[in-house]
Length: 181
Length: 181
DNA sequence: CGCGATGTGTGGAATACTCAACAAACCATA
DNA sequence: TATGGTTTGTTGAGTATTCCACACATCGCG
Image (cartoon, rainbow over all chains, first blue to last red; front, side, top):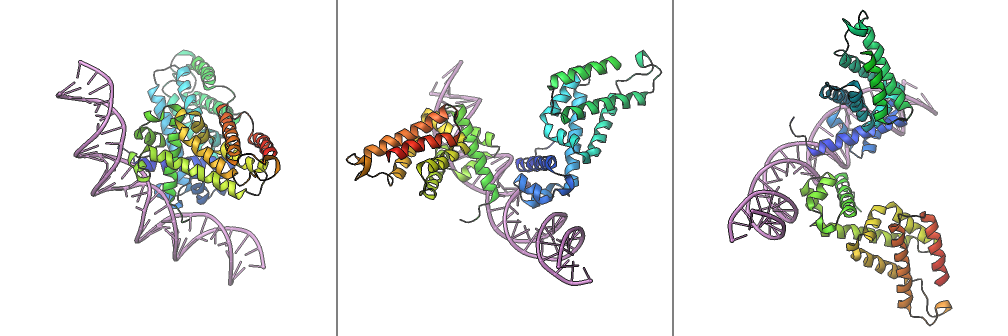
């Protein structure tokens, strides 16, 4: 983890913020590189210094958030669902520009599936079908079921402008998960 | 007016914003160059590329705003006081970070006097003591009187968090000035 | 007094960014 | 089909910024 030059951090931050803002305003296909560089107040060439094209740019942004979420998951692995969820929803709220545009724009199905994959993957260690309340059920069914539930809830939360504070929604989804795992 | 490199604009903007924010938080004497560079997210050395020290930095900021105000004055020279004031108060509102910290912090007496000088100077062409309602009065008295009135009103406006929209305060001070010049 | 800790101003080498220009691809319209 | 306008991705030279290091000043404290 070698130190990254402050200039690249600032440039990349500006560029990422710019494309997310633009995606909230118009269709991804209609966004040009110049749009992004103008919004980010950066030379057009600077974007190509860091990203191959706008698709690569979006990919990298998604990748970064998925990784951060996974990281949060693991650092909170010994928490209850309630507290673990809280960490996630706080992250959602901190990065609401990303998540709300990603989950509102219909062209972002790719992120939705990446997100679902992550949830399923991280829940896998939690579910036990050999004993307890889920004995006899299929693991993959349970995972898809509650994975979709969580992702859908997050979607709803952003589509409606985060009508409930993170603390509350984390608690309630935590209760529902604890009850079933 | 040759094109200025986008990088210097961004750096200077960040630096100026940083020092004003810090002045709103603590005493000017307690602000270090590192404080400013941290807040502005620029290297400490970058500040020295543009300014000799923090005093020079503040001077340059003041100078810039005084010049902008003077410019606004002249481009609006044929307006009534009401409309001319509106242009000013809009500029105040756009740059409220600067003006409110400059007029609130007690250490900024220097700006206040620069500001007053500007007002007096710009009003000089408006006042006429050879005829009309001000016949027989001393020009310098009138100028100081209404100069102080305007500056004081602006101070009050910022000290109270701009309780009135620019349009309104511009109108009312405009009426008071029109009545007396 | 001595002495860390902190702030200041300057220097040089590395490098990220800017700017302007270019050819190629694309796309709408005549 | 031709054509003008726009976007794209790349290049090269110039420059602003970064980063690190240094010497020096200041200051509170034992």
